[in-house]
View 1: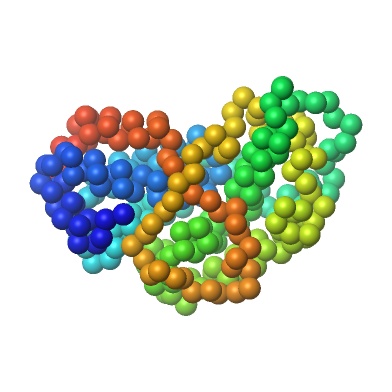
View 2: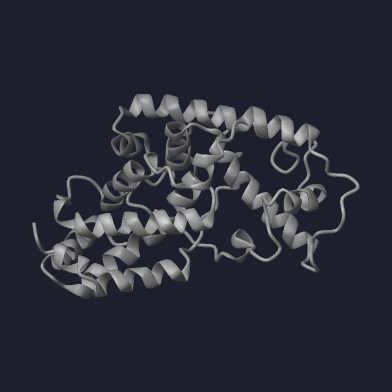
Length: 279
């Protein structure tokens, strides 16, 4: 990612009407926006839809960036505000809880089911289920806790930057993050055999997950997604808030889908581009 000064100059060029600069600005934050949306909303289709709207807001509000904080922090704030009120995604209609998830793990019928793999590798399906399950598990947290968890655990924002994004003090952010981590860690420890000492094993639950439409052999979004990296304009090392901080290895970054990259080009060709220079 560009340095703060390089980004500030790019933004100046973009708001002056430089299309190439604007495209570089949006391309530089699209993975950030997509990964936050994916973790906040739970599914690839919902994350793509939300990311488009967030990038449009970044584009049309670009002239309001004053460089008083890192550009990534400014983008996070726009994204977090939008996602906190987003109600069109799947889990807004079907809210989850750790209690529901735990009961499903204990009582879901996973034995004596037909083979529903449709000739797709069962190892691949088990990996898809693991990645999907840990992502969906985030939906068991309330919106504020989920965002704090993602900012601190996946993006590794320090408490000052994350507090600025969420509009709370660094101390309040640290407390919120610590509580969210402890809840996630306790659930994983009790139920998950992949990241804790529970009895649940993804390989045993593949057919059950397909039957419940939690994964589909025809659409393996997580295992098909290309891994990415997120380098942010924040401190090199975040505060280690508790002993569970290293447990959440499932918070991996993905490159944003090609459809989202194409959407940026469509935005630049639309009338929305003209609003960038009007402020």
